[in-house]
Image (cartoon, rainbow, N blue to C red; front, side, top):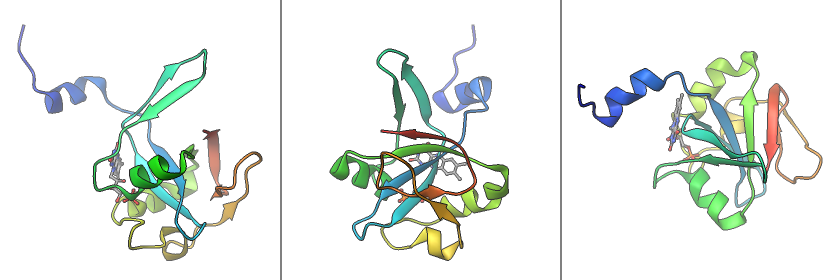
Amino acid sequence: MKELNIMEATVLTSPNPLTLICSKKEDGSTNLAPICFVSYLSFNPPMVGFATGKQSHTGKRVRETGKVIVTVPGESLAGTVMACGASTGAETDKVAANNIEMMAVEGSDIQIPADTRLAMVA
Ligand SMILES: Cc1cc2nc3c(=O)[nH]c(=O)nc-3n(C[C@H](O)[C@H](O)[C@H](O)COP(=O)(O)O)c2cc1C
């Protein structure tokens, strides 16, 4: 059997689901980051996990607040999602910069994009 490195392994397990992770910034607004290192971890209890790089503002804020909404974006956000991956919420208000319509979610104080297919509040 041929030995593969982890990058080569991803070719055989792709595509990954693409989520738009919504977290709360210091000023209360929402930060958005596309994350594809995401997986269901357990049905009972329901658990979902994702991995962010050390520099990610999303990771920092989720650790600090203990709150996050994992969303699956609607089709109209395809370009916007990619744009959100090109800047950091530490320096940019991505919602304003990309003119994204937001909406409230029951049970959370984090807003999410209005065009969202699925929202998992944690
Ligand atoms: C399609 C796509 C998938 C991505 N998946 C991940 C990922 O799984 N983990 C990660 O740390 N960054 C991932 N990124 C990069 C982050 O979205 C990017 O570093 C972003 O600027 C982080 O924003 P933040 O600093 O506001 O959290 C992905 C980017 C794109 C465009």
